[in-house]
Image 1 (cartoon, helix red, strand yellow):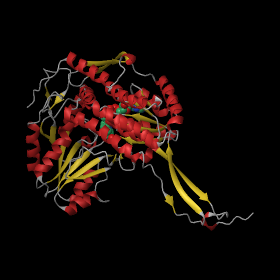
Image 2 (cartoon, rainbow, N blue to C red; image 1 turned 90 degrees about the horizontal axis):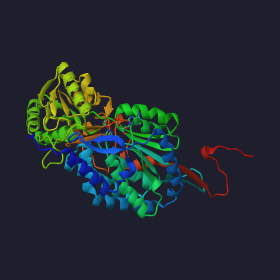
Image 3 (tube, helix red, strand yellow; image 1 turned 180 degrees about the vertical axis):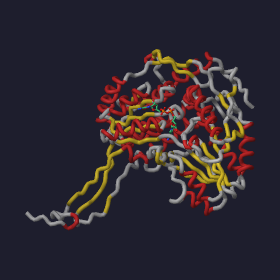
Image 4 (tube, helix red, strand yellow; image 1 turned 45 degrees about the horizontal axis):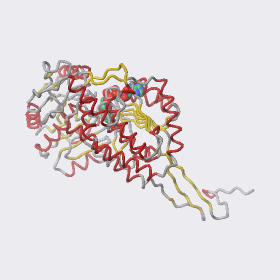
Length: 511
Ligand code: NAD
């Protein structure tokens, strides 16, 4: 099931260039000496110029100038731009997905799904553009009206991670744009072609609508460009997605200047498998969440907490599926597991497995490198399942690679305690046919995560709900539900039409 043919270096470079250009990426204007490599085969697929931290100021100032006009465009008219953007995304879904595969290594179906998420959030934002409402509240004073109005916030800085190179930006941008905010985007330095292509489509939608294209900007570059954006006092909201390490640096800088931040950081997600679980369903849910995307999603399942009465059978079923997982070229039909990002990811995978074994773990399946000869500069691995005697230190850490640690439990309280014992709080799930158990897991004494699923794995959220997690995951929420409020500011207004001046709380102040 492993040896899937890999495309040659020139083939991927050509494919990347033509897909980016089809989306309107202006490659000549961004030409430079920073090489970008594809995780598919390690080939160089881009040579681009990075922005310097000094250029960040000009971008933010241009966005601030554009804000003055954009905030006065009626929200439904802003929605019309997003509607056009969605049409362009539909038209170029395959181009953009090709770039996601070539730069992030996602298998075709997941890459197409990532672009579908962009289209879905645009749909949501277009509807929302007619629904940005506040409340009218009963005033305690006669002849008074108490109400709230939501106004645009200002420039939104978006920092995104390599593993969702376009969707996360669009979750933020589609909402920010209808809310009346310009967006300055610092994409992952690993996925610059995805960024230029996605940005190209949005630019086209803005230009066709006759709007100032500075409303959306992209700054290629590494952490130092992100740092300059985060520190800029002209950025009202910083929405940053990436590792907890990055969030730990970003959060205090934004807080110190009283800016707002929306942090979407690392996860360490678990599934509880109860004695009554449908083990076939649980196996499928676990394999998709744990091995899919080669373990490189923030919602990847990293822990299975399985009742002692079913743990042996479940491990055997999962291991059997893992042995047959097609690992290889992510663009080939039937591949389910593509490459790790790079050598560093592979080293982290190997080191974590070593630490797990040292802590008494037993590697049941996987852990080795694959396609080493066919792709010496790429890092393909067989996803690993490791049985652990206890939730050791390594299990508390997010290793961004496909390792599933299996723990066992006796009581549901114990399972919940294990689920909640890690510092991260993004996603969680329970597989059970016992309704009381499912309800308990979803209740206040259950999972402490931002996402709590029943009979589904931990990954693969829909955009209709708010997305994000607690504790070291950062506390931010983006995408659906009322996440739009993070991109606006609220004004509370009291209008007095009584001709008298009664004071609140019955206070008297006669002059
Ligand atoms: P990363 O933290 O290395 O980089 C993320 C982004 O932050 C990049 O654009 C990077 O240039 C920038 N950056 C890094 N340090 C910075 C700093 N000090 N100031 C400003 N910007 C800085 O993460 P990655 O390897 O690209 O992505 C994997 C990580 O992202 C995992 O931890 C994963 O769980 C997390 N992630 C979280 C979510 C979520 O929604 N919670 C989604 C996707 C990925």
